[in-house]
Image (cartoon, rainbow, N blue to C red; front, side, top):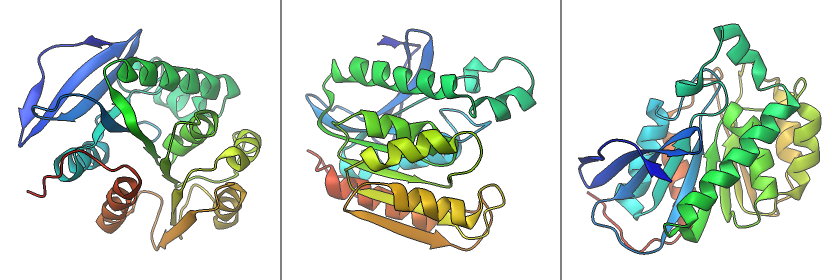
Length: 238
């Protein structure tokens, strides 16, 4: 892992940009932390990037409240990796080869972070919308993941076959978020994806509103769910 620039320290959280190959990412860790520590990988939605505000907020919560490190990357064609028009960015995640690329990159990033002791005492994944469309196959393929928060996605369009094949392979505890009035994924398709997940321990949280109207309480619920399965060495409730 190549660190890029100087870290930024704020209220006990160290934010460090990095590169793994040509994949840019950001790592959040507790200030002064040493040794092995649990890790949550975060996946952003379509047209967004590794530092979209809701990811930064969740990452900082995990670090400050539970001593859990967090990392996110720019998915193919997003953030610092944008190539072409916005229409191309929106459509590219429907291509099977992009899913394979994203899964491979997440494995490479995990290996790089693991070499620094991150994720060795617990590993989780959080990703909504495209973060589920690309992240669910990663969760299915990575047996070390102990807990996942997924949602805002369904068995809709070209990705449906891949998701339907991968979802039954997931066995870790899963919290799944759904927006009841989601304009991008029909209710039935979202419920079908939740039903397909193979985990015995899976919970469905449903809120009214459109796709992007996830309330703060679900970010808080995500934090609590992840922390419950990833015991940390340090707790800071400031």
